[in-house]
Length: 133
Image (cartoon, rainbow, N blue to C red):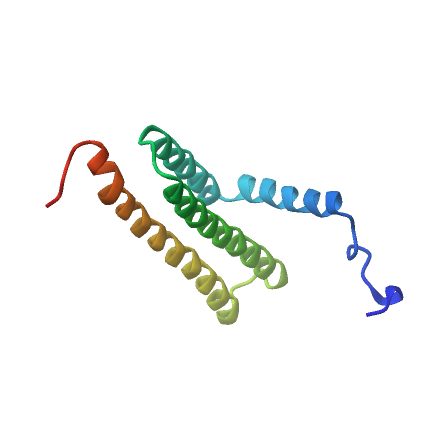
């Protein structure tokens, strides 16, 4: 695409692009209770990792897991906002789009719960001196 046809928001510097991303995070925080819930869960997970002296591999796994859940929630928020803007009324295709995006959040959240269960069983319970078997 030639420069004469490039939209004005393309080719912005890093600081400007970072500002857009931060604005998006702020908007999601303000608009979506789920984003705030995931943030609270992230604080709880970080606290548990800290007090249990979790090894670095668990920090990495949890960082990737939290990132996946929050990213899917942000994408879901973006899809919902765009769909509502383009078609404010009820439409089956818009409903399907929003349901699929919400399904992505559910899948990532269930995966995160499985990772959390593995962490509790494999690290937290032994740290507490408990054994399941």
